Image (tube, rainbow, N blue to C red; front, side, top):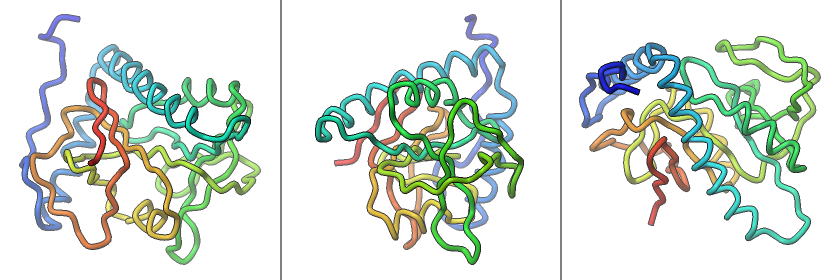
Length: 208
């Protein structure tokens, strides 16, 4: 693809501190994702999926033989990387796939079984949920990031749902984002939980 067709990088302050800066960066990055050229998005999403699957293959191979994972994934909204083809492949490989919903009372996210044949219904925040919602407990989370830094901290949508979930459940959490959404410095709040790794279209960033 000719570079002249590429979506220009989003114009954000690369050092994010207070809540106002978070909000401005969040709005800019979501708008940038939504404006991506369709072919550029497909190429980036395919590269992200390949890197994510390589990471998962290594993680799964370290688990006891025959033990199936429950992968807490997500249904892409607001220009997030689309992993539905990968989700279908994980399902075919015998792993359970679960999608999140916001729990009543502000608790940790709940996860319901998804299959490629699942009926999806619209829920809060424009997120689609499988119907019926069969509760599962994930063994790993795949988390969409609006922004991220090299320490593994992510900028989300501001609700703190994944942070509360990880505070309750010590799970591996793999952030998924586009390269252009990286911050040079992200002032993490006390409630922020870093990702185990972050996967972009060109990099797999691990903590440590």
